[in-house]
Length: 615
Image (cartoon, rainbow, N blue to C red; front, side, top):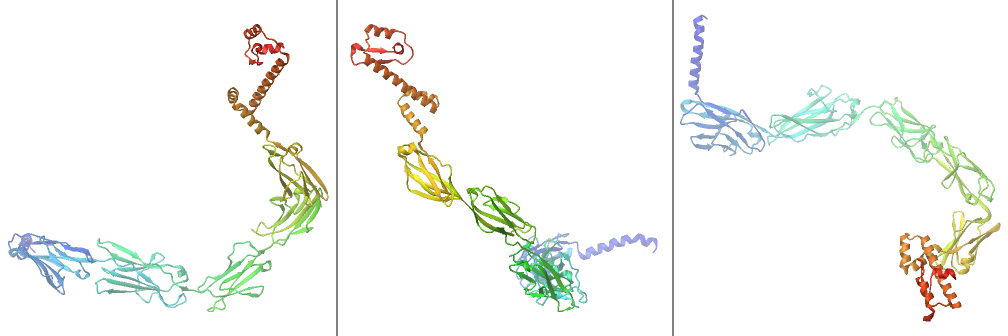
């Protein structure tokens, strides 16, 4: 090509482009390439055009349907009409803004829609919009096959499960998982693991997708967890998933070893219920036989139960399984059982004992057990000995009662044995120090108690006597009487005498007034009529000592005044008016002044402390 031709090439391109625009018109149509909508929703397909000012413009919406375009609606000038009687059944309308609106969208509405603009001399132009309909699928359902268990010895792949999801749009994808790891999708049936998928488009236009998983599992898959997920597209052009439930496969595999275990927590003691479990690492479990010392023992399945074991049940137990697919396989296991025991405690001497007061008592106890053991002598809650030997010097009444020797095996909780003997102490009765009785006043009833030790049980004698009640408290006998506190009883007390064949004892129980409280009450009565003394008493804080002192002083003063009065009457002391005046006008102390009257006005006299001193 020469240089002239190269220079004319751009010119020819420009002329060709101008000619194409003239032939095709200058109109430009703008639409959305794709519009997404959910099933039963409303879709709006926009359309705009530019590049023409023709007076007669027709805008129409058409759809690709059964191999040709079918008009749905159009606008000519201001007139808008719809031709959607058969295809969308009246669900499509065209707006003044040229957009096409489709209501109650169905899966079958997923088609290509064209916006066509005819502008007379400016030509014709169209543009397509794809309507995409979405519907979220249901959660996938996972089913196990109804066939029997899968064997690892099988030479062909076995069905693991079927995963199904329904009512999806667009068509979703199913993914299998084992132990949270996706299984690669394989459709080759000659592989050990593969899937058989199937897709059904329902009459509603939605998809049902199914996938069947086949594989040749190994023994390690006995605890594997299988599930599936459905992966689907959303309205926002993203991808989401839904998971099914999980399944485990019923896998048969041959056993390789046997275990024989004790279900109880050791140690085991006599009387316990013991359970022993025999099982293999295969599936299903074989038949098991149990034996001890070459003697068969009946079990149930792989469980051997001994309801109340004895020491003779100790020993070695044998469990043996039988695999009918492999008779030569040794499926036996052994278990050694130790049953702990403790023999009855032996006390020497074993019988009950009666001793005299002050004697010495000795006992020994021993026991045999399957392990290290302890021996304790106990009386009540008091531990008396830790070595099995009991020795009591100078026995007293308070040491009579039951003594128990307890043998125990600390290693085995609850393994104990014990033996008891009764010690009786006899002798002269002894009265415990009694509590004296108190009464508010003479003649009031008083309750007196007399408690005594003694064996044989002593008899009580009260002087003076009264109705008696007797009760036993521990090693003591308590006698109780109620009588009135007469003057004689308050003076001499009440005598309690006890006696048995070994002797007697005697105690006197005193009965007295509640003096302090009674005297205090009397003092308060005296003080209640004397405001001066009452005030003094209040200043001293109500002290009993002050009250007593004040009362004594008052009584002595009254006694002194009375004595002077009697002497005056007997001697008839003369007192002249002058003397009277002198006595009155003389020195007067701050002591108490008392005026004495004889009943005769001419012998009136006034005495003071000074005159008393002179007499």
